[in-house]
Length: 176
Length: 331
Ligand code: SF4
Ligand code: SF4
Image (cartoon, rainbow over all chains, first blue to last red; front, side, top):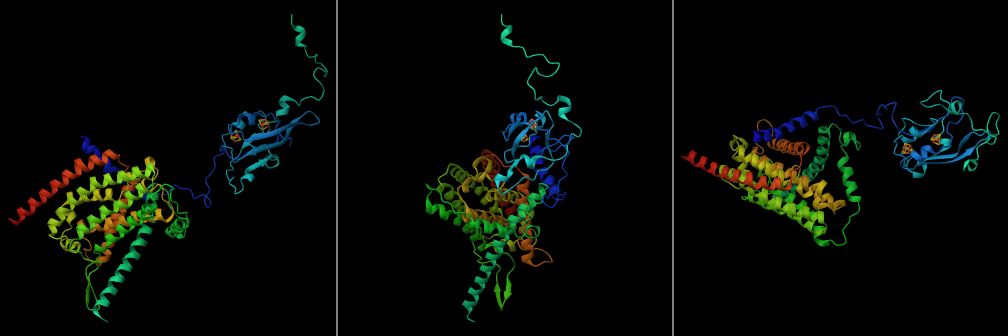
């Protein structure tokens, strides 16, 4: 009967709440007690180095493009040997939503997430991290990967001038 | 010492004591509520200020006192400023007729443990509880905000729908005790509390006072997910604090009333009367908190239906049945 069901449905919750009162609290009292962070936690970002100790980032702007809140900015530049790197690299952590999309976009596995989430700061300007602060001297979660071993460093000589290379085709010549 | 001086000193002492106890109790009831609700939701509740959060009420008072006292530009200033006081004062005034213990003998005088034993205590309580809604209504109207106004209107119509059954639930009590005085009503329950004599009236009164306290599941005047904060949307600082404290004083008052009318007041074995009274009142307060932790808010029309179509006929029926029973017992 529906009235019986209603009465039962009104009484039963009282028992549930009373029982809960004597159950252990599930809150983790943060500053004193710390939760155990999962290894796949997406926290503060770092820029890692390859096993040779070189910067992995090639300043390809892919992370910056992938970022949904546009909080990565950088300036690309090239070394003597044609190796690209970021002249400056900046992440605004007060805008970052820790989605991890930048790490998925990165072809060199340079930008990676860590388990650090304590970024709160009284001065908002200090939540903007520069390259020096982001750069770490280890490989992060991807030890042994070296992008340049797969891709080679960009060459200093002009195109078609290297041994065993054809001159670039002039596409206008191919027109009928 | 002349007689009148002694009597007025005693009254002043009682007044001061009641004020102090009531306000402290109301402040700690807030803490208790937050703690108990927290435990019911598997979290610890406030525990940062002082050991186990026991200084939290103090911190709250300091916060409320130091906040900006904001008055909206278009508000009716005088009513806006007076309304919170009205809410708190009516709640406090009701305690004047609450007998919280058996008469005491001090300096050879019989001192009743009640500020003023009115012979129409029941009516005084009903009258003040209807007045209490004015604080809310005027506050909601004066703030000149649509949410506050809606909350105030809801409060008024809610008042009408539960006040009737609340009054009618008290009629059997008065019939059984043959008196309007709260002391006499408690005296009449020396053997059996009225909750056992007339459980239906007890239940109706219980539901009505939950509605009277404007708390979940009947907190329609301030339904925060519909009306921001209902009638006190525009209030801030200590004016909001008065509304807030008023609500908790009201809780204690209603708990005392339930204790007096149905749970036998200060009557009880072994322990002194005042202790029994406090235990019962605190238990009722715990029940209120428990209800808040358990039930969802009713819809506006559900409350109306419930009040008019179920509670009112039931309480009328109960009055008739009690009358018939009393006549039958007289023979
Ligand atoms: S984690 Fe997401 S929001 Fe943060 S920098 Fe990377 S892409 Fe942008
Ligand atoms: S995607 Fe990777 S390599 Fe490209 S700019 Fe970002 S961090 Fe550097």
